[in-house]
Image 1 (cartoon, rainbow, N blue to C red):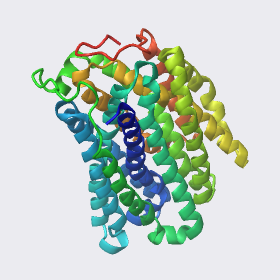
Image 2 (image 1 turned 135 degrees about the horizontal axis):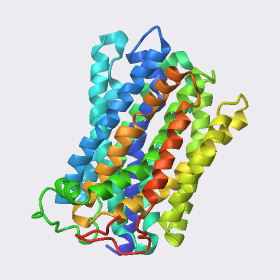
Image 3 (image 1 turned 180 degrees about the horizontal axis):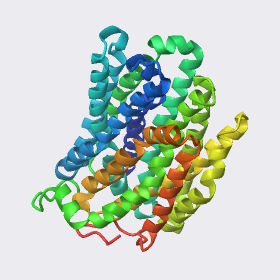
Length: 427
């Protein structure tokens, strides 16, 4: 098999595999207002929505555990098994959610089953992203590492985009009553079917060079990572916080806010969300290529400053009654997050040594997204309800952007340099 065929297959499996898996995981967020009615019926709509977002957060809380499990698997037994098992489990749980009875059929047991399935999905997706960006970065030429490493992120965004677009289309065709009754099942069943294609793709992958014989005598990869590289991992978590919080503020919370508070239809809110995700997807590869040319640090400094300066005005636009202004605010935020996610995958892989790279990348990323990203819709809903200030969520994001700027100080530039071996550079 030629190198060109291997690289083409690697890119396809890394990108499309992520798209399929993150589609399955993300559609719960898009369906949250409807799932709240189906599984957590309550007279108070805010209480119902909080319950649905609570289960969304539970899936994210499970991600660090999945990162540990799959990171260990990837570091000890190879990147391919970790990627293959994660997509299989995601497809099976998506099928189960699409077929399961709701509260009207089996009462509170439905909520218990839903929580269990979301935990399994959280474990699965927890091992997906870290393993896939490591896999892609290790296959990449140094001069194109950010581009290769961002492709799983493009796949993730594509999964979110397809999930949002398909959910908007189904909601527009069926209407709210049918969506609450049975229409919400369709996106989950479609995701289960698509996962089969992902399994076929990943079964044909080859390991990156030098990963066929892994060092199994240096101790548990996670223990080594936490003992010897905890400062680097902490810095990486902080650098990812702005993108994680901002993304879920835009992609998940805003969709519900537009329907519940701005009184837009579900279809219209998801259309706006889809446009934001599309803008984010389109800016990611060019931003990654620019990062390969000028470095990671200038891009990340620009993101942190942009979040501080532009966060409030863009959020203000999203609170206007004019459709074009709402879309402009959504797209503006999306461009900031797109640059973040274009650069961060390369930064993660470039600051962790090979023998703990999967564990370090997966745990850092999923600790950040599990503790901060996945809880963002819940925190934002609570902050608005508690303070009666619709701008409270963007103040939260701006504070994190300031932390991100501080974390960048002293970060070593690694663009174009070889990936570290057993002794990674200090961040």
